[in-house]
Length: 189
Ligand SMILES: [Ca+2]
Ligand SMILES: [Ca+2]
Image (cartoon, rainbow, N blue to C red; front, side, top):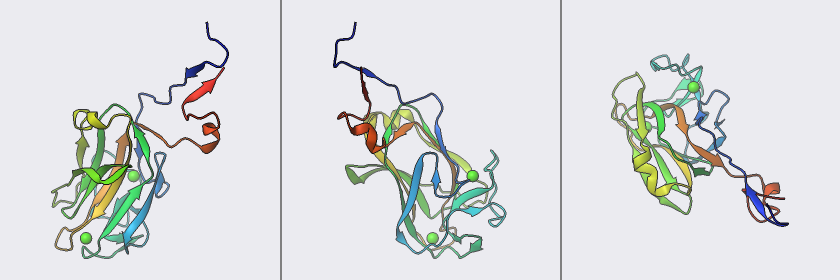
């Protein structure tokens, strides 16, 4: 029997991953991606504009591709760093579809933004491939506050990052009104 003032735990995770598919722009899968440096112009672009990108597992209409400004191909000389908003990491693999040979996706600690797990495609191909951070790789950061980086750091041939369908398990930052009782995940009874 619960005593007055006790609290119960409200689960905030499901078995289904959040999916960043870029279909509605840079706010996707519960996260918002913001350009930290670079001069990339508009993201995402469309598969129709980036006609040389193909995704065998269905990318929908849009993807992030660092050599594009909206619907215009700008070239591999561009570089950029995007950060996502922060989320609390939950158990499960993180998967994504990516291509290119000029950038990477990273998962970083919110408390130490230079402490990152990096996954760099080496795909001199226009066909997106499946990549992942495995749950084993991520175990040490379970329940920690983390965020994604999308980085283009090369200017030569194939020096871009194409990425779509970032699937992760996590809970996004809880709205401030739920902090009134001192904890984001408690409900008083
Ligand atoms: Ca997509
Ligand atoms: Ca580049």
